Image (cartoon, rainbow, N blue to C red):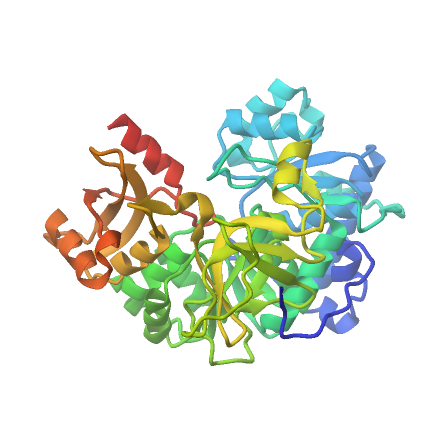
Length: 529
């Protein structure tokens, strides 16, 4: 079993609201919490706390409290923070919904989570209303933050000026949030995260992630995703940093916002790292205020990370997590410079983990002659591990064992320096002639080709019904890159059994909002071909 190199931290026995806002000093109340680039409007910590309390009071007066599930369908705007924490302050549970969801997808989540209230914004109202109507949420329970005829709005709730009542909850068992797992390897499931889970992960992250009150964080990764919820929103609020919100990613807007607001800390997913490393437009902006870029949500290869860091003059960091871990279990410690950026860093405090041989089920403990263990499935235990999947005891039992270890489904290795590298997903390993091939390894290699803008690899069956690697490649415009060029490049750098044997050029690689490659979409494309 592996342990964190850091001593355990104290996890306060309190709600996430009290943890973030309970000790707000007069000095911190005057700090800027949120900036809306669309209007330039600034919200101080004092104003944010007052708004959160007002939303909680308004909801409580309408019967919202412990046992109520409230849906939140909203992009990254300052009001998200107000409503999200207002719902939690009222004692209710928030289920955050992907802003790109269709009406049918929204309806499924609202139904599964037994949601009785829904917050949204006017651009998303058509699909929100269709879903709300289908599940029986009437107009006065569908709140449109920026206003719409026939629905309550945020201004109306705030203007009531109600004081929230005391709420008696057990932070360890009360479900605070219900994000839904990405569904890249199955049907999306509601991940039950307690107040203690959220409080613990903020406390754990503070040790490895050096975010300060002087920092300005560009919040482009969605708050509705657990990465954005904990590492951007909650950690930044705990540290009294300033969040500059972006409703969606646009590279030009992204660069303009960094330049305009002097952003210092970026949380990104790998596709943004690729753009920072390779896109010519980056040179047209002064983003020299950025000192740290932290990548998560999906594997980022070391070469791309280093190229991005060199180009913009910033330190590149990487971490690992999943919704079921609230979400972070590993991160590169800012206090060490001997850990390669291709790794996901060390365990956070209060966490232990195991590596389990996927063939034999035996625990891997020995380090090989090269200073690493052999690969194994990563099992994690700590105060940030979820309570379980909502209404799915069998799926919970498959993922969370009797000893409290979460079986991540990810394959990792441990290095002598106390850090870990993620090799790939157990279910995504390609087996060719008995050899295991990690798609992430081939994708990292392909991204190092100067004519490749993006790439993904899956296993497909050949004529002999053996699984072979197929690459989907986004080529640079007018590059003249051919299938044979790609195959030859990979063959030059890998063992013969790892060679890419098929190549398809595509306009874009399908990815989730958190940056994960949607391999199921690529497999569906392959099946339809």
